[in-house]
Structures are given as C-alpha cells and as structure tokens.
Amino acid sequence: MAVSNINLAQPGGMLDAWMRNVKRAGVTNAFVLALDDETKENVEKFGFPVFRMHQKIPKAQQGNGSNHAVSAMKFRILKEFLQLGYSVFLSDVDILTFKNPFEYLARDSDVEAMSDGWDKLTAYGYDDVMDDQEMGWSRYAHSIRVFCFNSGLFYIRASQASMDLIDKVIERVEGEGGWDQAIFNEVIFFPSHPNYKASGGDPSVTRRVLDMRLFMNSKYLFKYHRHEPDYHKHTPVMLHVNYHSNKFERMLAAEKRYVHGELTALDEFPVGS
Image (cartoon, rainbow, N blue to C red; front, top):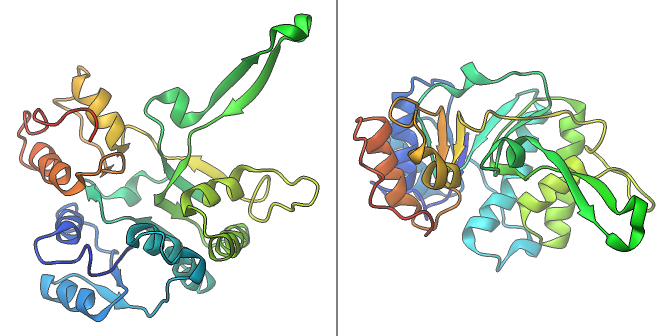
C-alpha cells in the first residue's frame, strides 16, 4: 500500500513510477490509498487499484511540510486495516519495486522494516563503546546501537502488539508534532522506565530488519553498492530513494539501470544531493 496526495500523483510523476514498477514486478495485492479526489482519478486512469480515504492532517503536524504531514497520517490509516485483521506492507512513493517483496518476507515478527543503515553494522546493530578515561579500570562503557527503521518501507503484522505500537505512535505524532520516523523507532526500541510505559515497545513488539541489500536505501546504492564487484549482476527487491532530494531523477535512472539493464545509468549522479 502506498499513501499519496496530488503532490506526488501528477501524470508521469513519482506515483506513476511507483505503480509502473509494482505492476512490472508482478505484485497483484497492491493499491494506492488516495488522500484526495484528483489522486484517485489519476490512479484510476493509470489502471491501478485505488481506495479513497478521507483523513485530515493532525493539528500538531500542520506546518511540518506536506511530505512529513502525509507520512504522519499513515499510522492512523494503518490502524484501520490492522483492526480488520489485515497485515500491511507500507511503501512510500519514492520507491521502486523490482521483485515481488512478499516472497522475501520472513513473517516471523510484528514489524519487518527497511533500515537506514548502509552496512551490516549500521543496519543490523553493533556494540558501541564510549571511552571515559577518568573512570580508569571501567573506562569503557558499552551500548547497543542500531540505525533507524525507515517508516516509509515496512511490513506490519496484524497482532495486538502491532496495534499497541500504532496506538502509541498515533498518540505521540498527533500530540507532539515530532517526526514520525523518530517516534516510530522510539516506541519500538525504548524500554519502559519511570514515568513511561512502552506500549508496543520492548519486549511486546517483535522486530526484524529487512535484508539491506535486497531492500536497499539510496545511500547504500549511490555511495557504496555501485562501486562493489557484484553491482553489475545484483538486483534489489526494492529501492528507496530516501537519502536524496532529487528523488525522481534518481528513481528514473535506477529504473534504467535495473529494468532496462543500462549499467552506466547512475554514473552521472554524485554520492549526495
């Protein structure tokens, strides 16, 4: 499921690229949730399944920019489907699908999410050690660090733990006005502590990081993977252009690379935007 308004749904734009590649990958259980009538009409003209839902931007999110505001709304939308017993694979629109992602899910966790990490340590977690020389013998203090789950690409299973997670995220997103991805991760990972009960957090909601080379973010692609020996033969399942502001241009170039086999299609782009 992708959630979109007309800002991304103009004919020939980003949503068209999303739908075109979902179709090409043979995904049949996909649809667009349209936030306005014009988006619904454009998706219907494209010939893709669409559902119109009336949702208002939460007051706390107004003024946060269109993309972040729409992103914050998706958790209340997700709740509607989870309550009906449907598990959902949520995808932002700045994503290209090259293979059917449902064939690559483990389905053993409440949440399976793409990582914002760019190597095995940042994506899957590592022992992060702080050195405080004043402590002498105990100078090294250990912590566990894992880079954020991306709230624009994740599978969430219909379970009570998932409902607890979504309810807590909604409460904070609509009450605080913070960035939905930061809140999403805090609710998943932060433990209960004085004055805070972790709804949907440790240990009730189970979580899995999707394979970072199959569910790829654009930092890994443009900074690292395109220079790796297997670049010419490896195709990700999905690519999220989340690290770059010129999203559409890089999406079209990635489509040339992975759909049409143009190995030099990404060469003109620098590492960052």
